[in-house]
Image (cartoon, rainbow, N blue to C red):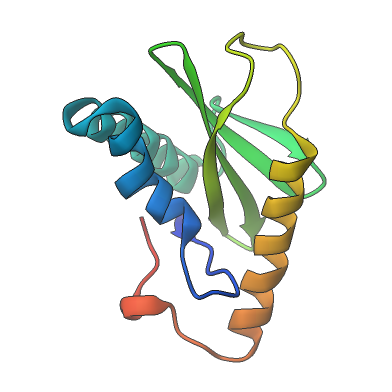
Length: 136
C-alpha cells in the first residue's frame, strides 16, 4: 500500500493540483469539472491501494500517464513512482481526440521529467510541501 501526492516544481507550485482544481473547471464548467476531478482522484486512490491502475500506462522512462476521456477530450496526468508513492507532475489535454492514436508530445514528456527532477531536488534539501501537505 502506498499513496499519491503532487510534485512540487521549482516555482514551488503543484501543477497537477492546479490542473485538477482550476483547469478542469475552466474546460468543462464547474459541475463537469468536479466530476472529472473526482474520477481522476478515484483512479489515484486505486493507484495508492494497488500500486497501479488499468488507467495508467508507461510513457517514457520513469514517466507514466493516468488517462481518462470525458466529452471526447483526452485528459492526461503525468506521474512517476518514488518508493511506495506515486507523484503527479502535471495534467493536460492530449491532442488528437482518438484513443490509442499518437503518443504524448515531447513537450509534455520533457515537462514531466523536469518537474520530477525539480521535485527530487526540492525535497532533497529537506523542504516541506506547500501548506504542509501535497496529497491530492
